[in-house]
Length: 207
Image 1: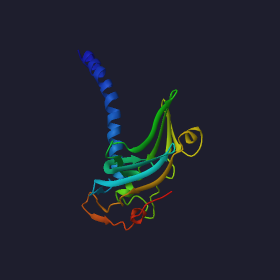
Image 2 (image 1 turned 135 degrees about the horizontal axis):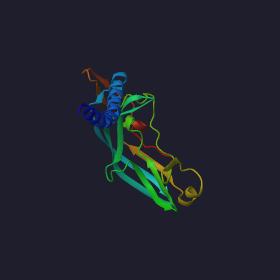
Image 3 (image 1 turned 180 degrees about the vertical axis):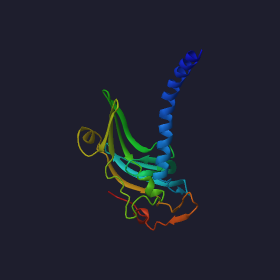
Image 4 (image 1 turned 90 degrees about the vertical axis):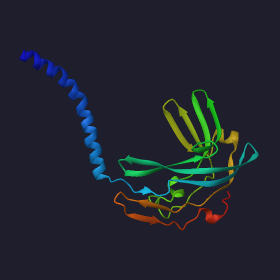
């Protein structure tokens, strides 16, 4: 009877240990990360809108766009280089896309997208993690993304067959200036980041 009970205990105990040990390691690692890398202060302003006006040439035709860029706080991320950091995202109000797509097509098994980046969310949302001396660079050239299966590469759209085919050139790109934000640490201390810079000094950017 005792031998049978022992066998039953071993029969159930081993699978439970196999499941429990990885879960325990995950919990311990999470607590270690939380103790070594404290939670970054959370922003007081988590949402903002920035008017966008863009003018560009594509295939010899002039295109003008008026839209709104939405900046949003996207929680906390973590990597080995930075530890914990604030995540942000930028999207277009009209489409919800995180980029301004000009061309989207397929060539064989390769998906090709030509687009303009919306800029740096940290800069627009007044995040002090972005270098104070940083100056927003808006595109003099779009980007081209090529995706084949799990392989994905993005580069400047400056030369080559696709560049000659579409001949894209940006003329103007204007958005609203970055906001002033506040960040509150978990202990309740509040500090304010005042950004005196404004995007293009309130003017137009021409290329």
